Each structure stands twice: as structure tokens, then as C-alpha cells.
Length: 407
Image 1 (spheres, helix red, strand yellow):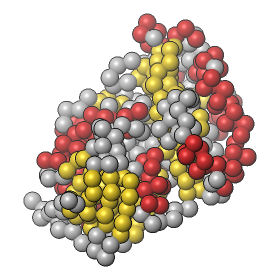
Image 2 (cartoon, one colour):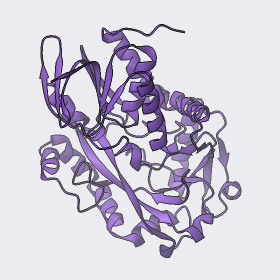
Image 3 (cartoon, helix red, strand yellow):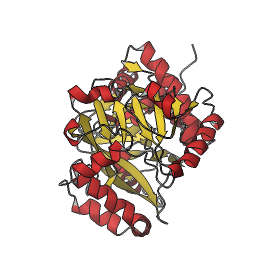
Image 4 (cartoon, one colour):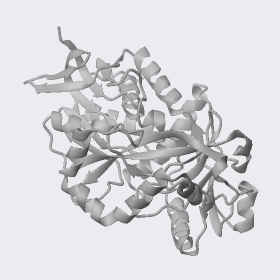
């Protein structure tokens, strides 16, 4: 028997659950979240460094900038309200080479444009007031940055959505889709569901879900694995809070950095290597289907021809602990190879256009009865409350669903 709902959300990561929470706050529509894995926050949400981003990196006026800045403060309030462990600890962004100084200045000006009025420039000696073991030519101190456990946050979003009537179904991977006159039929590994409207928050599989639903988005999700090292307990004093390099403007990745975790410990990384599987958390995780899909996508080859040297460097650092540590030593010269040990890894769902460009901004595609979130990498977790509200507003405007009366 097919179960019927007004709205089905595909994906139980932080964006999917934030959307469910927002919809149940503003609508009386029946809603189900379909999650492929046996738990929520199983992939990008549960395998990141837990940083609450400030918004300093993003182009002023972009979806990333607006949602990150609004979402950051909303997230801090949410964590306070629900007693979720977090800390607004701040971070420094450090220039270690002369050619990074103009980029650092541009980043400072971008931060001011994004409303981060409390950031401040640091000289070489001032850097050590914040991070005594860090050496650099100049830095920016960013007090807005924090740390949190995003799995805890996602679980609370789910709890609040369920309290308003939402259903969360795990082990429900989408396997088929049919569009009828007034209904969408979703075939999943947990059975069939009928829904009037669909919201795709499938992360690593968002492009596949869109194509299964009959769309032809001109992009492809390419998985990039980010690998971390953990600093051994007796050397964690080398890092007080968060230490970042000046990012390369050509890439939507931030470079290897140091992060103190709210759950304890300090991690170093990540790098960014092409994964051979959408859930490729190890070098040995291989999917011929996944590899085949991006090998036949023209944008993959255009990206490869453009950035092959950078890609080889990232693979070398993945294979060589010495090379990885050498990159870290730019920020922390006293770090030694024996000070770190292999940690976890995450996989970033990076949208790639047909012309080989790595999509930097969030990408959301609307149809009359569907909303597809096709690119929502970092800082999506930071911005999750704002993104969820944005998607809910789109749904309330486009979908014929009952609105909850304001109290």
C-alpha cells in the first residue's frame, strides 16, 4: 500500500532536516523525510570539522554570503536555546608568504563588505597573542567563527520537526520515480510513497535524484574526499582554537587548517582529492558507476586539464604523511610527523558545470511541484537554518499547502 503525504524531502542531512523543521513551523502539510542510510547526518553533515563559519570568504550578495551570515547567528541562538554544546572561539587566517598578503587584504575588505565589522588585522607579533606557536607575516582575526557538533544539531532539527508531525524514515533510498497527474510516486527501499510535492536535499546524490525526476540539470556532482589528521593529545597545546591559511581564490576549498573540536581534540586538514566513489571515504572505495559517470561528463575533463597539477599535488599529500605535515608546518612550524596520526575523512559534494567550472555558490532549481538543492557545500551546515527557511518560503509560495496560523 502506498503511503500519502503532501511533501516528501529526499535526504536526512542537515539541510533536509532544517527544511523539514522550517516547513513544520510554517505549514500544516503532512511531511516525510526519506533518508537512504540507517541514520541522519550520515555523510557530509556527520563528517566535517564542525566549524561555524563567519561568512568572510563569500562574494558579497551571493546566496552563500547572505545565508551564512544570517544562518550563523541563527545557529548560535538555536544552540543556546536547546543547550547544544558550542563555542564562539574565533579563528585567525594567516599569510605565510609575501604573495599571499594582497589576497589577505582583499579578504579583509570582503569581510567588511559582508558586515563583519569586528574582524581585525594582525602583525607577526600579534598573531602569537592568539596562537603562540603560529608564525606568519600577517593575519586576520575573525571573532565570529565557532565550533559545534552538527550531528547534534541535525538530531535536534529532526526532533522539533517530528514534534510538529513530520515523519522521518531511514533506510529509504530512492530507487524509482513516477509522475502522475496530481501525484508523485516515490519508490524506495522502504516501500512506495505518494506525495504532491518533492524537495531534493540529497547532497552527494542530488543531481541523480533530479535526473530521476525528469530534470536535466547542466551540472554533475563530483565527490572530493577531505582527509584529516588528529594531533596527538600531548601536542594539542600547539593549537588554541582555529588556524587557517589564506585560501586560493581559484578553488572553493579552504586549504589544510587546524580546528579544535567541540567534542575534544584537534584535527588538521582537510586536503581535497578526487574520490572514486560518491561515498568514497577511503582511497580503496571505488564505484565503477560513479567513475564512469564523471568520465563521460565533459566538464570533468575541462576541469582536469585546467587543474591537473593541483590535483596531483593533493593526491601526493594524500599518500605521503610527510608531504601533508610539510603543508601544515607553514602555519605551525613546530609540528612534527610524530605529532599527528590518521584521522577521519569527509566527502564534499561539489557541483561541476559543463564548462569545467567548480560551482562556488549554492544552486537551487525550482519546478512547479519540486525544489532541487543541487549545490550546497560548505558553509551549508552553518547556514542550515537560513537555507531551510529559504526553501520553506519557496515551498509556501509555489506549493498549494495549508499554512500554519501565526500565534
